[in-house]
Structures are given as structure tokens and as C-alpha cells.
Length: 82
Image 1 (tube, rainbow, N blue to C red):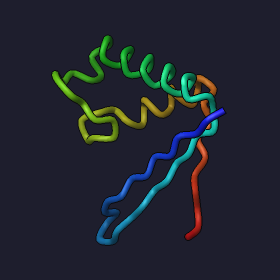
Image 2: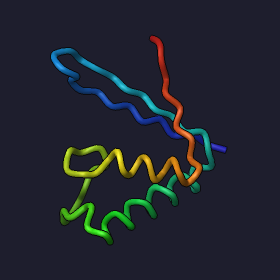
Image 3: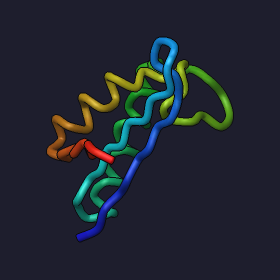
Image 4: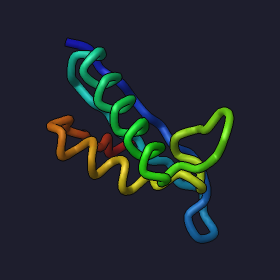
């Protein structure tokens, strides 16, 4: 069992915002599901950029990717508090 933590910092309206999501799962399982989901998105034209693409960037269909990843059984856990 392993874990992955994703922290996103930016602006929401006019104030700073931080979102933290964690996943507790076998790291190979997480990597395989994310890689397969992104590969499928590229194959259907959802990600059309060439070269290096960063997940989370505005040109990537991030909500759709997360939905597919969650449907595969990967559970996302939101960190709340200080």
C-alpha cells in the first residue's frame, strides 16, 4: 500500500486557494490507471497538444480525467483543515 498527495495552489475569485487530494492505494495501481486514462484521452483527441503536457493545466480535460479515474475504483480523499 502506498499513497499519493496532490496539492494545487492558485487563485479562486480574488483570494488564494489550496486544494489537497490524497489517494491511498498501491502506487502501481494509481500509475496504471492514470496512464491508461490519459492514453485513452489522447487517442480520442481529448488531449491534442504535442510534447510535454502537464495534468492539471487548463488545456487538459481534468474533470473528465478525474471522473474516469474515480470510476475505475481509485478513491480520492480531500484533506481539510489547517
